[in-house]
Length: 481
Image 1 (cartoon, rainbow, N blue to C red):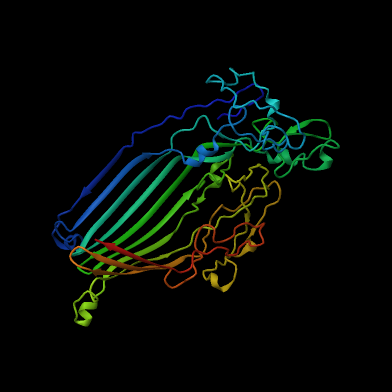
Image 2: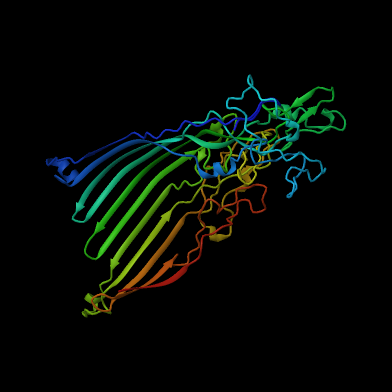
């Protein structure tokens, strides 16, 4: 949806150019070098292989964007105005004044191609102004796509045991993100931010109050937002200006024998983007200022999974239905923490980005004073997760110096396991009993994107406020016949 630039221009939908062609290429090679050090490294013929691949993959927009894109007044079903709260039974009657804006829409959408030079003047925009809070799908959007590349080396160490060393990378382009469509200008806003700078009895500009016309003491008028006029306040574009990058080293060891199945995997990775979802707005002047580590980034991640047949029969020397059929399996994970997201929802930059439940984070970030963050790796000591004195709210008119995310919260060390017993009840019948335990040792896990409060306005700022579930046990039985 394209916002009108003045009263006479209508909104119009522009179709996105969809591309289904996804080129990809892959190479696999098994070296057969049997001399000297190459034989020790590669293990001889058929013992190792090298794989490489590259592909471009196009994708659709995330579902949330469709959910909020029911379009804007007067052609859609959404209506929001700073003139007053609507009534439930008469959604276009102002609750504050009782005046009606009529029940006119959705109005017929005008002919495709409406623009400044071919405007539709049949709309009485005064019924809807000032419009605020509406999102718009930018008319020059294009399809998001990802370039993915891999390179790996696999080596058989012994019968049933293989080692894989690989690199995985991805670059995503044209991701759909939210950004202010008519941002505030800090210098203009500050020029009419004091009562002495405006005409008596008129409003002043300030955080979350950049919309409308401001009258200076000399009678001249100022608009703090642009490029759209005073008829629009906090409106947003959904634009395909997002990008991300991911790089990872992956090590995997697999072993399989008669009684044991084992896989150990370690990933050292980093993910960066300028918005991890539609909940995070992007700076409208320089999207690069919003670039930071992704909300879901985990730098170190080690996972061990296993399935072991317990040798009770061999240990006791008795082979019967009670000593056989026992299996222990589980997943153990050790990982570094997830990034702490820093908030500044005070609109100190005067850009006027407004968190509204869909976009929960504005453009602004706090200030960061370089120093020792004193990251707390032991959250059970009841201390702050980091040095909160280094993170402060900027002065009005200033952009924050901190990245949205640049340090990490507590990590995770979790054990899940299950004990299983299969009991034979004849040739065609069996009973499977299973005991499962999640977080076996009941170890508090202060892990996740919301584990640490990163809002300087909160009384819990810098504290660890969330933990994962405690130990959970469950029993299961399965009868097969």
